[in-house]
Length: 516
Ligand code: C2O
Image (cartoon, rainbow, N blue to C red; front, side, top):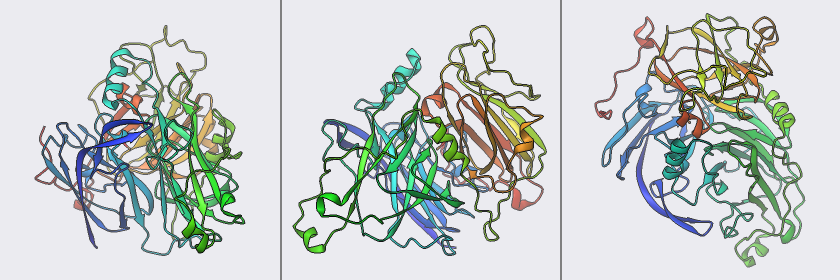
């Protein structure tokens, strides 16, 4: 297999958005960071040099890191941070995954600006009608006018939600609905009649998003680097940590130049902060009109526009539920769905905010799960459902068929938690509202073609059941990808033991693994 080499310098760069100029932590001075593009099966070497006076790490979100857990990246889970002036080389292979993933810093809130696309090209032809145009990453992010570390520190000191970000962005650009931002608008030229592969990545810290393109529908073909049965939707819902690859056909009749721009927009599904921030980031697809006209065109500026009417409104849970419920694994002969039909162990955990103890505790992880949930109407002040902060880890033997039921208790704030599992993909076999019922709900699981992902949006006031096989030895982080919740402790870790065969052992860590 080939080895692909990359160099990441973590460094400050002065960036201006919304008329606020500030030093932004970047990779190689780029905001968002550089795209990593490799082929399935490639070996990847990324030399990360920390050129700032702070710790850092990089995580390859969704890359399975089979037997290379020390290259996974979360600080204090699989490695100590890369200190100021130090270098660490992340060495890993990309095995049996294809599509869109991403990378981001995994130290404090650095991922606010340290992130980029991680594209895995397939070795065998793409299984859907061929989109041969350049693949377009669309990365959704958030911009704060202030210093993000200060935002985090204040939130931890004073509690409550973090200060709302000042803008959502598409590829680092807020777009014309924000102050001073008309020139900072993402505009993508497309050829009429062609079909494009859009790689949507939600890198936002704290918000699940809806995304739509005016007059165009989107055909979902892959999520979290696993193919899906294609389905067409007027819009998509994407949680932080998730990726969604869609086909977009530039099939509208291009008008004269003023009619050749189609607006795309992303805005929150539910915001995790109060008051609700209903703001929207906007970009454009610009149909190439005649070459001649093109030459005389001034650089494209956003035209007057209205938001796409296919963009779901804030709080549109029926759309979110229906969209997520439409996702299915491709489950073809070439790409079978390896969902465990039986399980060795079921773990039940609550996913919530809680008031007991200080600071907030969110995860309850019983060894003997209380199968009967009744979280409707529980008073979080008088009933202690809290977990504790700790360093205890649960261990599972190699090859365990594990089911994890994530019960959102909806105690304090209505929220949909995107739970991310490191080192493993999982299958979302069930999802529902209310209390999970171990007698009834497993009967309705999809064990044929459930969607395969690395991040599941656990519905507000409901539950999600995921299944995975612990086929990757190491220590793996599991956490809410709403960054504020990771800070508050909605996180746990588990250890997968080495298997019997040497090929089932964690490889020895590299000698430059940073010391603590
Ligand atoms: Cu994308 Cu532990 O995160």
